Amino acid sequence: MDHSSPSTGKRRNLKLNFDTVRFTAKSPTECFTAGHPTQIERLRSHSLEQTGKLNISPEESYEFTADDLTDYGEIGRGAFGTVNKMFHEKSGQVMAVKRIRSTVDEKEQKQLLMDLDVVMRSSDCPYIVQFYGALFKEGDCWICMELMATSCDKFYKFVYSQNETIHEHILGKITTRTLKALNYLKESLKIIHRDVKPSNILLDRGGNIKLCDFGISGQLVDSIAKTRDAGCRPYMAPERIDPTASKHGYDVRSDVWSLGITLLELSTGKFPYRKWNSVFDQLTEVVKGDAPQLPHSENFSAEFVNFVNSCLTKDETLRPKYKDLLRHSFITIYEAKQVDVANYICDVLERMPTRVPINDNL
Ligand SMILES: Nc1ncnc2c1ncn2[C@@H]1O[C@H](COP(=O)(O)OP(=O)(O)O)[C@@H](O)[C@H]1O
Ligand SMILES: [Mg+2]
Image (cartoon, rainbow, N blue to C red; front, side, top):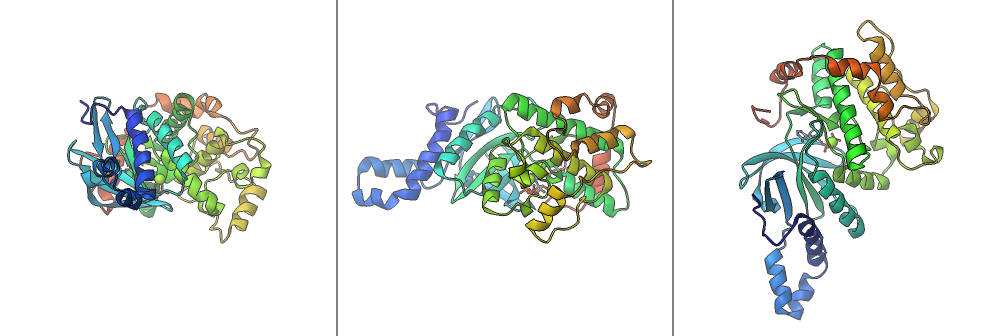
């Protein structure tokens, strides 16, 4: 069922958002002083709230504004925004809403909304977080997505704080699913993630492992990060920190590096570099220093160590791409292995303190 007005198709509706944003930002007083009835009518009908389209499933969509969402409280906070649990009454859907400051110009905003359309149509990969829709409000972009129980960063920090480790079986499933998600984004949606890190790999009680923060969110972050230093992107590959080192544009292999750092962190319980005091520190260590490596140990198979370390190949031209990694023996082993991920995640979540009760079913 489509609860939006019959005349507004998805693409048209998204475009309308921007007409509205531009309209309200530049000319409300102009409209009133001009007193033109059609302009006033236009202002009234669109109101000052920006509308978006919420696609709960291919059969169920709604037009929505920020006022249609009830805030249940903050779930998390990143360097560029906050994530809250919210409820959309008309659909009965509970969701995670990420609010991120939008510094992009009008042209980039239009592009983002076109990209968003692509992401919204893609619910056929079980390893990416479902994206419901987005709108712009008062200079913020609100991104509505599937609510998960927790993220890998919070999860691993809790596990290691209990003097426990994450077993390779679980790491194997996290790796295969994240790799498949990244490959799906690249092959099916033509998207490069650009922000692979533990907090962007989400988990739920059903044992699902899903990648988030690609597309619109990634691009907004990228655009904010351009105005800041690289120091706030600690998972960034050497060739990204020092772009003079890389002759090409963004390549999937930069995400392969970030995956390597992520796996090293999840398997050892520590971010592999010391705390940097400045961008210069980061540049020196990541660009000039040796790549961090996972040492061989009795805790991990030779396949896992080899997989992680090959992701951390310093020279990006020698670093594997997804198709090579998908053929790696570590992936073929763990694709076939039966692992009770749900049971393990539930056991840890039972013991983990949560700021906002997520949902007993997640
Ligand atoms: N869809 C989601 N479901 C549940 N928790 C989420 C979701 N998206 C993000 N979070 C939580 O919110 C936190 C902040 O997210 P974000 O703003 O993307 O910052 P970052 O990824 O840099 O930590 C994450 O660490 C994660 O724990
Ligand atoms: Mg994130």
